[in-house]
Image: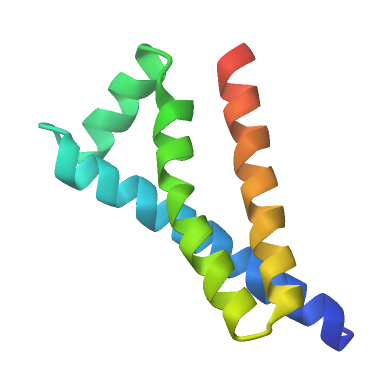
Length: 95
């Protein structure tokens, strides 16, 4: 794998992990239920996309850290992870 593809993939992986961590932190601090029950209720009440969207806020911080360190291809990977999160939100809203 080329170095550019590798850097973008690393940024994508870090962006997805940051999104998952942000979603988990949101559930941990603002939900009265456990992780599994909150996800079930979110899917039932059609707010799962909102949780993913709030989790994506951490991608903003990761993106600016990569920009500050001049890791532009990793920053592109984080943008790609945000697009993936947006597609997941779109799918959960309409299906």
